[in-house]
Length: 411
Image (cartoon, rainbow, N blue to C red; front, side, top):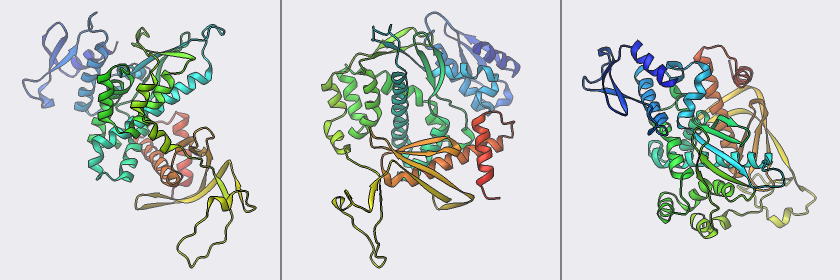
């Protein structure tokens, strides 16, 4: 169906067949587009031998046409109902197979949730690290600038569920490569196009039993980078309750992950990295007298343990009326508040903002403010995109954005 739509589009726009071989039909562009006279666009022919590679090749042609005509593929070729088919082109497909005989090989809901969570964590950490490696120089390698840019990219580029087969719990996830492009730089758009393919190659399809593959990982990423990218996936692979199988788009098994030996895990994630990150951090509310003539105050841990003027807390609410975006400050019409909680298992801090229904995980307590502001600005950018788009708003999430920012933004 997608191939047919592309071909129909080419014919409507005046493209003409120039030649063909066993794998492609080559189309010559109309003169008004301004391409070289010698250029021909290869459109793949679906055969039994190239079935696995066909979606990628077709997507490459679609992306090229999208750039030429400066219109997103879903608007260029697809009706709303076919948008999922476009996303499936570069999707990752998995099957989770339960090893639990007592419950007829059914999966626990927690196992499914945890795998999806680990996959998402691994992917987003990969995006942040690769973005810094490839595009950090464009932002003067400034951590704040990079953080702001990559969060903007991730706002439009998170993993999305694009297919599901309940019986065996098989599913596909993909990344949109066009939505929000008008808000991204040329470099960011180029980076996003190859993102999922690169993640699949460097992480999902990594052969943990191959010495050559492991050496490649050690060369590409630091110990800390390997930890945040590969550890979430390794935890799922070594889960005893189920087996993870990488499949094709028809959920035909391609790769069944084998449990990864501990000596391999230690090479990828050295124990000293884990030791450095282990800390017993708890949120506490403290009342102390402050001498304002002094530049700092020091409190020893022992001084606040079992103290009448300090107590551990499970959550804390912060109210703000000004949003900081770099040197710019946005004064809100209404005060807003967000809640901080701490996860007992990981010690990470969870920032919850109910008006926009988003949650952030922050490891460093001192970065909660900047992380919240960055997420707020990312949502503000999307709100401005919605307004600029000028289309009827039907999605509940977009309606919530418009309602919220309409109330709090200055006139």
